[in-house]
Image: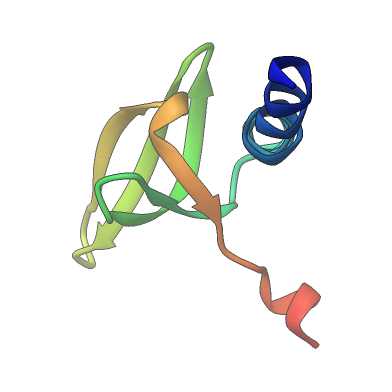
Length: 87
């Protein structure tokens, strides 16, 4: 009986979490310059540079200069769909 409960627990909780982690890892590995992203803190930006586990995000363009921040690659929550993918 206990084995059945553990099996159900594994199928309902652990497997879906592992799938989500794998998808997130693949998304982070596929990031490239120009991708529009949202951080886990809710900041929207465009990837303008990468250096290992850190990214440079352009979050605003003031005309004469761009506002850029450095974030951890793991802080990226999602990649927004590009205009090409929407049409």
